[in-house]
Image (cartoon, rainbow, N blue to C red; front, side):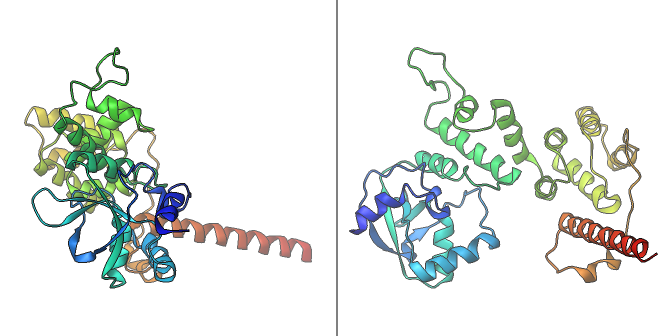
Length: 313
């Protein structure tokens, strides 16, 4: 089997490496080896390269080489080629000190490349809210630049669609949910991280996104000191006060520390008492999950001990 035939076949294999390219339709199947130094990533790429994904990919490439070629396009201004699909493979190649990688060069616009980048990664099993937020915004901006904002339709005789409505046709999310995700791009990074960690829910986060950067940092500073995050009602209240220029650090603190309806009393354990049991890179959510698992194990241990004591009588 020659190299070109192998490339066509791998497009239909459901491996992690080939899933990423399913939305990409190359104008040519010609594969060429290109110097890594001639390739640059799309610096607006909203998807993160997670370490837990990189090691098995690096091991695979070290053993088998890059099976699925990268998709690239000629940069409009510089003598380099921008990655359309294959950022993780490119990163793995640089870590393995590879000098060349197989690529397929696409003759497409920057806007088309951005759309392909978004669509070819939405299949991933675990996508953070922040990744979806910037991915949807990236696609919306690309569609607008293509001049399709007022000329989008799936039916030549049908009604015109907005950019968000067009995106929703190719996504599992509704147009309303996509708008919510895009609003998250207005959040300060520290708060967006809390959304990714599940500390702040989507709807409150959307309301907070309308606050000024300074007001948002008041919320984050209150979270750091009191470990409280806003409910939807609290977020809506802060947004209303912000619109009236009446939101300040004191009102943020008063709102966030007020008891929430049906709120159970929280048990707080000083972190210095438990940090010795965790690695440096553990998030608060991961620590909580490990503590719960440890308690479940201890509960089962006590139950077994009670059963042994009962049988011994």
